Length: 219
Image 1 (cartoon, helix red, strand yellow):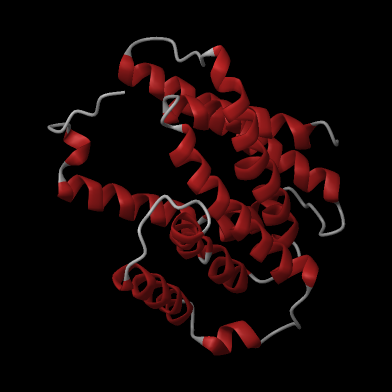
Image 2 (cartoon, helix red, strand yellow):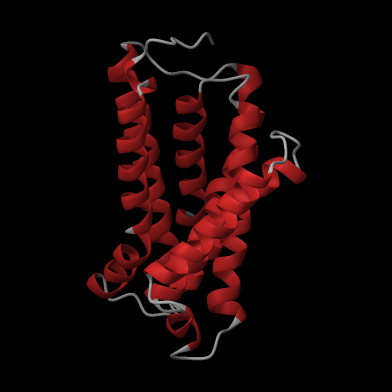
């Protein structure tokens, strides 16, 4: 695909505002899902219901992604036959793997702890891109940026005291959220690689939908 250098979405103010908007949405995920658990009266031990909620969420996200993509380009978004393997692999990492641990964790950790650990995925992704997938060149600015950004997230949510206070940490809570962050980092690198072969909107929309059908089958 040839990028339009004069596209509206490439202007720096637009890039910054959209990035901030996406960060706000991403940061609201943990508290919003915990509210949904209370609203639908889903207990921490009710694994099938939590997985069903996750599946419904991502099936809807997949449909919305494809639909809005269709509105933007004015044509049906159908994957190439060769792209299905990328969609399935991406679905395993970004939706099934990541959100299995994500939804499991939220029932066993506080919203503050979950948000801090979950945000670490944003800083693991560039490190994975540099050292694991060799997609980026290593530089002091990138490393320092990841470290400063991670500690900035900790300070924003109340500092180290917010992490160590409350119930003891556990594999089912904080451990599962860390696993979700790892899956997120890997999926972020994967979509950059796969988008060389397929439209990223198509990849995201279809992998969301396919990933959402898996937990729905557990109910």
